[in-house]
Image 1: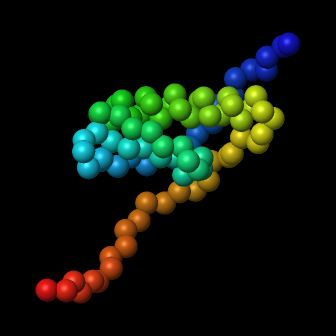
Image 2: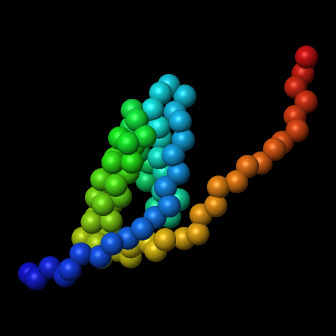
Length: 84
């Protein structure tokens, strides 16, 4: 079987410092795609690898590969009164 040329896909990734140490990364356009690493560099490398494997699996099963969506990082402030 003849393989088609490689196509690149770009997704937004969010990294968050993990409470125990290291970083957790997630790709909003790919629900359930979370990974982590002891350093930011390792988390980034793991994200690339996990994303590539996920997309290859989708293609192998004839499923649609998600397109990049606009992602936004924001903050919310919630006033809270705690019991004394």
